Image (cartoon, rainbow, N blue to C red; front, side, top):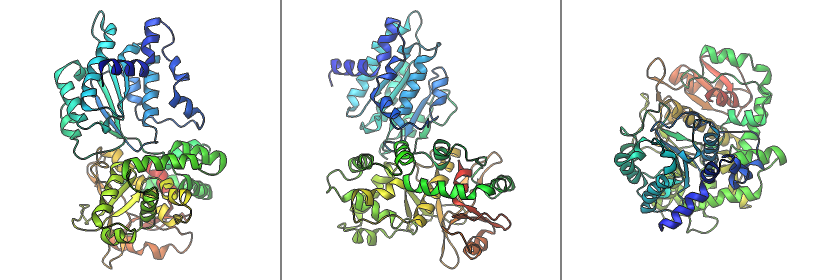
Length: 490
């Protein structure tokens, strides 16, 4: 891009600069911004707090990488942060620089950083002031981490606060080495953050605000005394949790999908096509239109068992294991799928074994049947296990930054009889030192649960059987409704 094009892009993307220069309301732009205006059409009051510390703190030289799937609200979170910063009396709006980096090349990014500072140089009189850079969808630029590293090592950009967002986590970008090795500033929050669709707890806050929730528990203490006491006090609301969970397993947590389901009882075909367009672009852009629905349906139907890649590829019509595996890796990189590896008793992944693959939001499991009539609908047994697995992975990531993108969150285990424990203990830090997560077995059942708990009890002597609607806390393996387990995980 030419300099005049980049200047125009920056001026258009930062209307608060002109307002600051003219002495008018620097937040007036929020009423005309298309993305924020569109949110108003499906707004249930949900707001991600993932960048609150940046919105409320002075620029401190920190660098934050915000990743997650498209349509989950990363751009909205960034624009909300810009709006809050513009409204602060201790921040000059010209310190805030936003840019959407979609379609740019590395040379464009280098020049954009130079021009962004030049266009806001008036804020440096009489003394230089740090900027807050909000670089949206930067991960589509090949070599973006190297560009940011060079800029932070060689100039004032290294003293600025930087938020870099992206929807795909590509292994050949050395985020840790280029950006987080001694270059993250003084911020104390997570430097790698994920914005995923609403978890069940956020879903309840948006759609069922009057349903009392248990306190969030550490993943190692889900079956502890404090959690049991909290759940006992909520025993009267088991049916309410069950009905809300079924709704959540039907619409998922993408904010617009939740709003549409709340208002009409279904996610609109238009939004489902929007999600499909994202997945086609990131996973299989050159394949026939039914490629992604067939892939999602194939995964959704196999989520509860370790996947034989060669056999699954053949069943789904791929020419071999490699083309199928490439697409599953793209799903994982796009945060649409989550891998669950077999774990040994010490929590380490067992190399050379089959893994389970979960979709990361329920609506992705429903999408094939909704956009391609004739493809199967997911069953609630699979959705129940999937949603619990994702909730546990999210909780692990909150306690141990970088685990999700390192493909090292959840795992399953084999028992002596060859059966599986759905979510086996994995290592996790706690305030008292290293520990392991509570083992969980998922069973979509509302009766006869004790027989289903024997595998957990024999292998670990403790754990949780995540049921449909049974709450029984009087045994070493406790029966807890899956939605209550998800609520404990946060």
